[in-house]
Structures are given as C-alpha cells and as structure tokens.
Image (cartoon, rainbow over all chains, first blue to last red; front, side, top):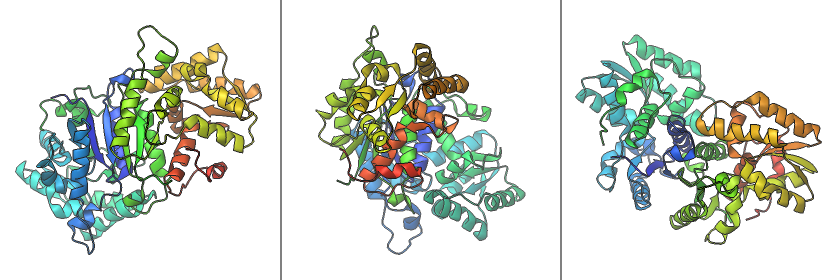
Length: 248
Length: 248
C-alpha cells in the first residue's frame, strides 16, 4: 500500500505529536511542499491519562473510547493509514485496531523488529510505568528472542519524573540522573537502550542522543515515510534495514 | 468565545505548520497533557503553490478550492476556531472566510494590530513575492497609519531564495545575505522587521532572532492561546499588549 492521507492519532502528549510530524517532514526527500505527505493530525490533549488507567489509579478514566472516536474521525476524513506517536497508548492497540477501518502502524512492533534485524540480544527500556507494567515491549521482545531489561524502582522513578514532572510541564529534565539510569542498564549488559516514551524522544534535542539510544519515535517516523511511499533521508545508516515490506 | 477544538489549516508548508503547533504547545501554561488545547491539524502539503498562483505563473493552479475543502473538513470535524499558519495563504482569506462556518484568525491583521499597539510607525516586511505582491500587509498597515517597506528587487530575491531554495528543501539558508537585507531595511528607518513568512519563522531557531524581528507566527500563536481561553507563558513582555478582546 502507499497511503494518500496519513492520520496521526495524537495529543498523547501534544509536544511529541508535533515533534513526530516534524521528524516525518524533516526526513522526507522533498524539493517543494507538495512532495511531503498529506497528514491529518488529531491532537486530543484531553484524552484521559494512559498510565494512570493502566496502573489502576483511583479515579482514572479509560482512554480507549476517546482514542476510538479519534481513529474513526481520522478514517472518516479520508486517512488510509494511522500512526500513534505514543508508546504507552499501544497498551490499547488491539482494542483500537479491532475497531478501526484502516491499518495502524504499531510503534512497539516496529521497534522490536528493528532491534531484531540489528542483531540485538539484550536491550534496556526507558518508558512510562504504564508501558513497563503493560509488558508490551517485554512480550514482543521475547517472541523475537530478545531480552528486555527495565530500570530498578529508583531508576524508574527518575524516568517517570523526567516524563511527568519535566517534559509534560515544559520544564528541564534531570539529564545527569537519567544518564545514571542509562549507565546502570548498560552495565547490566544491554547493547542498546530503547527510548520507549515519546516524551523521552523530545529530550534527544537537548540530550539522550548518545549512540546506544534507539528512539522508537524515529523508527516509527522512518517506517511511516516508507509506508507512505516516500524516500526517507537523513536517518542513521542503521535505519537502512527498515526498508522492505511494511508490517501493517 | 473560548474555542474547544482548534482547527489548523496547514501544510503551507508542512514544517512551519508543526512548528506553529509546537509554539502553541510550548507557550500554553500546562501541568499535564490535558491542560493543552485540543487541535485538529490538516497538513495538506499537496495544496497548489500560493505564490505561483498569486503571481500568475504559467500552469499555476488556484489553491482556494483545496483550502475551502480543508476548512470545511475541519469545521465538520468540530473545530470552532481556525488558524492558518501561513502568511501568503491570507491572500485567499476573504474568499475562505466567506464560505467558512467558524471564525478564522487572520495572521496579518493580528500582526499589524500588534505593531500599532506597540507604537511602530515604519516597519519592514520579509515575505514571499506572493505576499508582497498581494499588498496585504501594506494595505492593513496603511489603515493603521503605519508605513510598510519591502526589500529592493535584489533583496527580495535573497528572501525568496531562503524560503523556496532553502527552508522548503530542508537546506540551510544564507544567513549572512538575509542579514544584509535586514540591515538595509533598518538603514531605511524601519523600527522593526516583520517575519511575514512562516518559513522565515523557522529560521528563528538558528538565526533571525535579533530583537528587531517581529515574528508573525509567534503573534498568531499568542493570539491563538488567548482566543482558546488559555494562559500564554514565555513570550517576550512586549506580547502582553496582545491580551484583551479577540478580533475574530
């Protein structure tokens, strides 16, 4: 397939949604506006918090009905491929895809496939508590024959603070503390560390850009460009393995 | 009014569309995702080139029908306020607004109102040939009692090359040449220089950030946040004059 209108189910959070759209735009070979991918972006910032619901926090509302409504809205408006630039939201992927008339690229599936193609045997995961608790990365990694390690509780608290206490509030994150969490995972034998939360992807603009990080959002951006029948440019050479058949 | 869903009629070009969305997000007071503005962004990159049509270039197609369709699509999906993060496209504003069931913020009107409130008497305009030829800024400036100067033909060629030859092609612009065009306008008595093309707004991340530049896109972002009933944060103190009644 080659999508004519890309639907972006976003707002989870809003800044990483637009950063994803910028990544797609910056990495699409283009000589003029019209060479770019037509997109319809639904940034529904008011979607109930995904991690709060997954962890069963008191009063947390189920975000799936809102996400379903947005996916239907995008498809009704003509989108023939949907992407969700949020790892945590993929906890709801099956419930969403079952109800959606157009294919949805899966950021976790694409990222694990990338790690497998690169021959990774043990990776670390930096993500929300919701993504970690859901086991989405661990399950797909196991299927692919990869081990997936997560930070210890103190390390996870540092990651969660960066996501919820810093990025989502437009405040600077504690880069040094995040660096120590990353180093601990590397010391435990991880060959690479997955940035499995799009708020952490945002930190690549000001840090977290060392070569051992694999940004799931960049993998999704590259796969999106390819699935829309365009030529990706400016990604690291390692991304060449993403060319080939789409998995949707 | 306080908009519940902001419609962004974009893709003109795509990168500045998402940069505008990032500006709105970065400058909205928020403690969590749900504090942000819900947005629906139509990035219709394939819209026929606006400048080519305004200048009557051979074979140029009228972009208005596509823009009308996008505005209707946004309104049908629930948008109750529309913004167009592109100065040149405002040549079509009247034709678009006449046909649109929801109000559309006008980037040129908002920017000229800002200049007037700031007591500016003579400004320079850096924009596409289409925007310059349309006289949109000059007309509204005249109504507001402001003089609006544009670069000489050689200077305009430098500006056009930065927009079409550099930014729209993901290539670096000739910052030194743009600086000379700016200096020439300052030498001719301009108190400030309007970045009246959203592709030039993108250059503020790597230049064109001197205090004499007034970025129309930032003015639009601030007015958008206010019109959506949110609290703008992190703009320069001069932007405080934008608070008050919306002009839509």
